[in-house]
Image 1: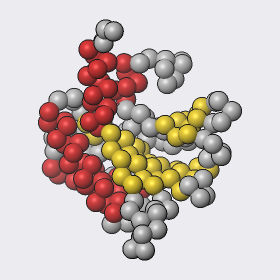
Image 2: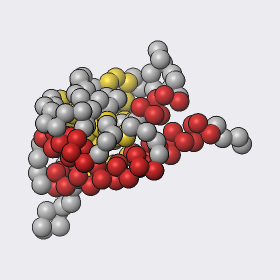
Image 3: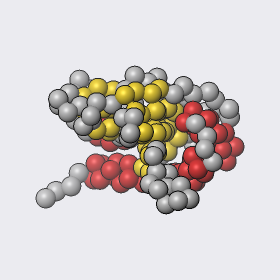
Image 4: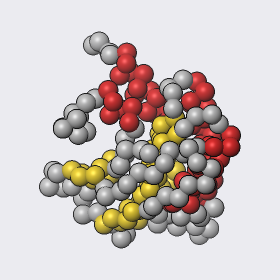
Length: 173
C-alpha cells in the first residue's frame, strides 16, 4: 500500500515526541499506585527537535521522580527549556490514580486529553492549557482532576497527529 509521506513524518515525530514515565514500586516491590504519562511536541520536526525532546523527557522524568506535583513538574521543566534550548515545547502531563479512578493533568500549550467513555462518547477534559514550555522561565500552571467512569480510556495525542488527520479526533475540525 502507498504511504503518505507527510503522514509518515508526522507519525514519526509524534513517536519521537511521546514520553511515558511510570512510577517505580516502593522498596517492598509493591506495584506503583500512581501512573504518570506525558505527551509532548517540540517546535520543528528535525534532528535537533528530537534531541531536545530527549532532554525534556529526562528533565520531566527527574522532577516526577523527585515527587513534585504536576503543575510544578511543568513549571520546572519550562525553566529548563527556557534556559537550555532555543525551541518551544508543548506538553500534557497526567497522573492516573487507578484505585480512585481519577486523573490529574496539566497542559503547557498541548492538546487536551480526551476521555473515551464506555457508552462510546468522547469528551475533552476540562483543562485550560497554559503557556508553552520555554515561553517563560517560571510560569504557573493549573492542574485539573477528574473522576473517570469505569471502563473509560484516556487518549493523549500530539498536535502533529491532529494536523494531518483532520476530523479523526474532532469531527468538527
